[in-house]
Image 1 (cartoon, rainbow, N blue to C red):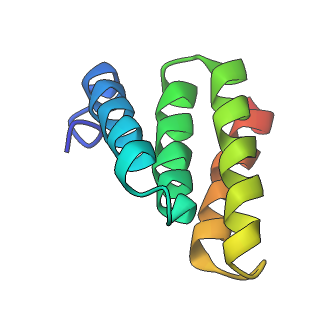
Image 2: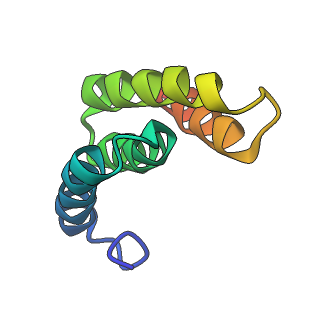
Length: 88
């Protein structure tokens, strides 16, 4: 919702909290944390934190590829976000 409202800083804070919780409680499903990490990377890109975005998105993509095939939607989304980083 915050992203849709253009409040990327608030969106980043909420996603960071979500990521920390997911890492703590969803350790048996790291692909779920990787999805949140992709969203967080995208928000960092929108905030101009391109290097941080790149790091998060590369980590996300690496993890997602361990659980999903190359043509899976979540892998495609992470690649799209990473492509946007390289475009800037």
